[in-house]
Image 1: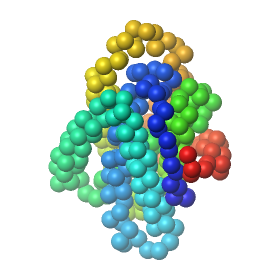
Image 2: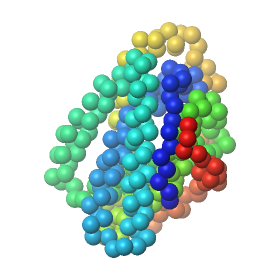
Image 3: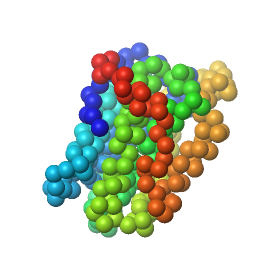
Length: 269
């Protein structure tokens, strides 16, 4: 695991950068707001254990995990400037998300969830990111329909998610975490992903004055939907694998294209 610090240039990213599809673009735009604060949450959940972890592989993996997640949140936040230039409500959704998810909900849940249970939520969310990342490197997901720089951002982030997909899970197990804890955490994670991405999608759509015209102009044809039914079915099956007793993240195959991408990845934009 390496800590990479790539640079990205978003100035020429078009308004509907995801296959020219405004709905898919706004759904993914929501994740560019969710990811930075989500990554900071992951780091907050792992950092307390560094004080007690002995020197060794687990400690090194946790430090690398935190370093990678730190750069992920920086990179995605860097895209916000382009969203602002396009007049999209990135700051409005960010304020809503920060206030409700972390200033209120996280603080209240801290009264009921232990550090280890919060770590289990991180492990479950990391499973989500790993499974979704694997889609980017499969042949049935034509990322060529995405803007080149956004494709580069997603592939770098996705490949590193696959690289550290088991860190939070292994740390949870090493601290005595149980299968029951992880199942409960998966339910929390699933509700969070569905709820916040849905709210973000609605916020971006409502805040895009060009959306009605874009929809009328035929931007939602079949060629604008790069994610097909077979890919979605495999995505659902892989996500549900987390609920299987005895599951470990390494049981899910990593697309060889992910490691090949990192082998040739250059930090410079």
